[in-house]
Each structure stands twice: as structure tokens, then as C-alpha cells.
Amino acid sequence: MRRMRRREMLAAAAAAGVLTATGRPARAGSAAAIAVEAAKKLGPQEITIVWEAGLQSLDPLNFSGPLWEKQTGIKVKVIEVPTAEMFTKILQEHRAGTGAYDALNVIPAWMADLVRAGALEPLDPYVDKYGYRDELKEIAPVYRDNQMTVGGKIYGFPDDGDVFVMYYRKDVLGDPKVQATYKAKTGKDMPVPPKTWEELADVAAAINEATGKKPYGCAFFREPPYMQFMFQERFRNNGGKFFDAATMKATINSEAGLKTFQGWLKENELGPPGMVSWGFVENLAAFLKGDTAITISWPPYGRWAAGYGTEEKALSWVPKSQIAGKVGYAMPPGGHPQLAAGFSLCVSASSKKKEAAYLFIQWLNSKEISLQRVQLPYALRDPFRESHFASEEYRKRWPEAPEYLAALQAGAVNGLLDLSLIQTDKYEEALRQGISRLWAGEDPKKILDDVAAQWDRITQQIGVERQKAAYAEWAAKPNAYPKL
Image (cartoon, rainbow, N blue to C red; front, side, top):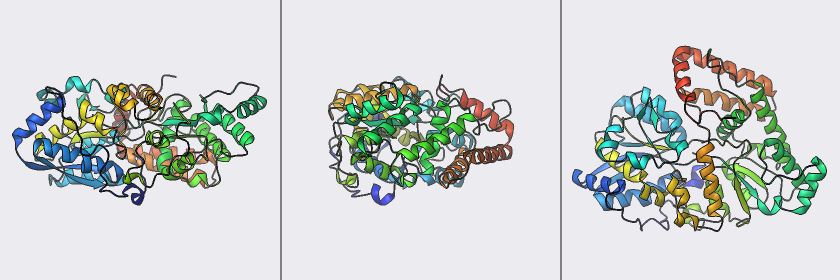
């Protein structure tokens, strides 16, 4: 997910979370219990799992790894890798054939590339052997139907409900002065929350005028690695298609792409000075301090804005929320949020301990264990099962938790799948460079034309027919494009 600075993410890595030592036993006959009993028969051993470095890794280090060892006798060695290096390291290890990795965390957009390289083990035989198919059906549709299979075979278990959510100050948007200002400027009643980007810009302008920019009407992170996800989302909500399906010519320089870039520039004028350089942390800090009224980010913002779990030592870098109880949750404008990054649990094809690795990821992903994991305040695993959204335990975590979970559930129906092609990273890098040029003040249309030309060159290098087939498979998935 979010590529936060390591020094901020690893504060007090040894901290014991509120759930670290209290894992509940699984129900007899459940997928979790089946995995435990089967793993016991394999005998004591050690398996490795690749995990995103930082807060994410505190899940297997402090909670799930120790609990699995306690229940089965199998130790889990966590190999922490920065997100930007995970794909390359997984592929390099597979090609070396060392067997150094057993279980893997894989961003779903990488899965097709890794399957083509032979790096991922097909999981269907294990799923059937250990009776996991029914519990897999309970994973929310957008993750289950888009992030689990390649070519009709299961290669990963969707394990992180990453989705963009809009957060807004209910007290600010509900302020009669702000609403009157909006009506005077537009002649319309103010929508709460805004449903389109045009409405959001008008709401933000009204807030700025009515409050004297205390708070600012809106703010967003702007670092290009994050913004390429924002582009994918907004471009498609604007009606864009990434390629001409017949020719594989890039079409991101269409009117939809230009509208996206121009909208960003307009919103930069409505936010705080210096916002153009903001990352995840800077944007979070401004929102939690009450300096901004509307933002968009991944699910942890919603939990931390409520103050949930921020007393944990590992979250000491998160500013104390000044807005608890004042935050509303909604879909971003357009109604189809990006499933930005996320993780699926996989088994390495070069592992020498595939059975043990599979049983561990079935247990991790199971209904019972995953519910405990997505409630860990520090681990950044977000709800992804229907039972997570409906959990009475989770819904009682803070007063607005039911509305928070309802927003995540809406995203789990309407979310948009990250683009996944052969060598997706090359296309993403070209887009990131284009966004950097936009922030440097270059012409939006020229930038998009250049990026489209780069995409065309990448496609030619890979092979038009090969990429056309990969794109067709991706575009056929239910959530590749919104039903506008």
C-alpha cells in the first residue's frame, strides 16, 4: 500500500498491540481450525513469508506469526521488503530458485506478471484439499472476483481491503454560514457530501470564503507514486479508457485525461500552500489537526481520525486527532473508488515447504483470524470480508465505526481494479514521471501526449498482440471499468 517513510512506520517495532497476545482459538471445523490441525501433522519447522516493511509487518511479527507458532509449532520468519522492491525481489528469488521464500504478499496488479513468470503456485488443489472454497466466497465481491485468479485459476487470497475513501468534516460542511455561502455562489443547496469533482471544488471554495481558510476547504496528497492511483480512478470516472482495445494505442491523452489533470490543478489552488509536495503523512497530519475539511485516502485515515488505536507506541508518529467524532465517510466523487494497491497472500512456486506455507495463508486469511487482524490498530490491514463489515465487535470500536464500515463496504462493491498488464510497472513509471512534470508547471496536454507515446513504445517492445491479450483479460474483469 502506502509507501510511507520508514522512520515513521517503524517507531517502536517491538510494541505489543492490544490484540497481540489474545488471539482467540478457531471454531472446530472452521477453515482456520482445519489449517491448524493439518499444520500440526507436518511437525516443527520454519517457513518464511515476504511482507511489506514497516507497520504492515507488525502483524506477522507481533500477532499472527507468534500465534501460529503457538498453535502449530511452526515458526514464521518475516522477510521485510520495501513495497517498491517487493516485485523485483520476488521475481529474482524465483529465477534463482533458492527456495528462500515460502509464502508471499503480492500486490494484486502484479499477479498476472508473476504467474506468467511461473513464480506463483496454483492454489486450487490446496483449497479443495483443505475445504477453503466456501469461506473464499465470503470475501467481498470486488476483491474476490478481481484479485484472486489469473486465467481462471486461484493464485492468491485477497487479504487487504485497500480502497480510497473520502473523509469530510461534518461540522464544517454542516455549518449554516458555509452552506449559505455555497448557495450564494452557485444558486443551489450545498450537497453533503459532494458527489462530483465539480461539486467538491465549489464546496471547498465556499468553505475557504466562509471560514477564511480555517480550515481550508480541501487537501490531498500529491506525491506521484500515490497520484498515479488517483489518475487511474478519476480518469475512468471521467469516462476514459486506457487503450483502444483493437489497436492497443494508449488513449490516456483523451479528453478524460486532460479533464483529470486540469481538475487537479484547480484543486491545488483551493488547498494549503505547499500541498503539491505532500505525501501520505503530511496530508494526514493536516486533516487530523483540523486544518483541512475534505480529503481522500486509504482506510487508516478514518480509524486514526477517530483516535482508534493511536495510543499504540507503533503509532506514536500519528498526530493526535483534533477531529474525533466530527468526520463523515463517503465514496470519492464519481462513486467508483480505486482499489489502490492492496495485498493478496500467495505461495512461492520455488518454495520447498509449499504445504506449510499454504496452511499458514489459509489460516491468516480465514474468516476468524482475518477479523482479528483487520482490527489491529497498527497493522494497516483493512476489512475485505462481508463478515468484517458486519462485525458487531468492529462496529463498537468507536461511535462512527458503523458508518466507516458502510463506506468500505460500498467501496467493496463499486471499487475499480488497478491496471494490470505485462510489465505494468513500466506504464506506471511513465505516468508518475508525467505527474511530476505537471507539478513542475508543464502543459497538461503535452504531458499526456508524451506519456501516451511512451506507453505505445512500451507496448511495441512487449509485443502488441501479447499485450492486447493481457489487456483483454484485465478489461473483462467486473471492476476494470465503471458501469457509467
